[in-house]
Image 1 (spheres, rainbow, N blue to C red):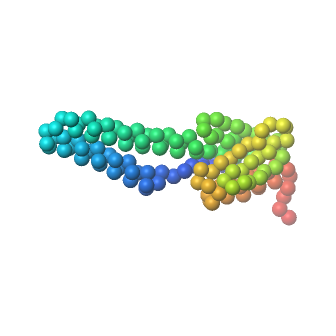
Image 2: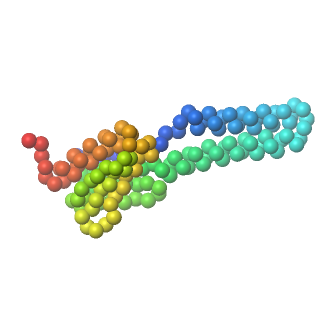
Image 3: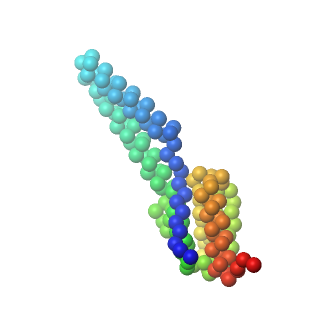
Length: 148
C-alpha cells in the first residue's frame, strides 16, 4: 500500500467572490466620485469600503482554511489535521468506525477519545464517501481480512 492524502474543505463559491467584487466596486465608485467632483470627504468612505471588502475576503479565506480537514493514510497509521491540530492512531488501535451525517468517528480501543473526521461540504461530499470506503479497506487489511 501507499500513502494517500484526502483534503476535505469547503469551496470558495462564486457568490463569495461576487460579493467582494461588488463591495470593492462600490468603494471604487465612491472614491472616483470624490476625485471627479473634487470632494475630499468622499475619499475616506471609499477607502474604508475597499479595505473592508479586502478584510472580508481575507477573513473568508482564513475561515475556509480553518475548517479544512486533511486525512493522511499510511500503511501503519492515520493522521487527521483540522483547525491547526493533529491526531493520529495506528490501524491496530482503532476498534471500529461509524459515520453520522458529515462526520466519521474512528473509535480507539485504548481508552483514547475517538478520532473525528468532519466534511465541511456536508454528508453528500463525494470525497467523504471515497474516504469512508478507503478507511473500511484499510481497517479490514489491518485485521487480516482478505477478499475471498
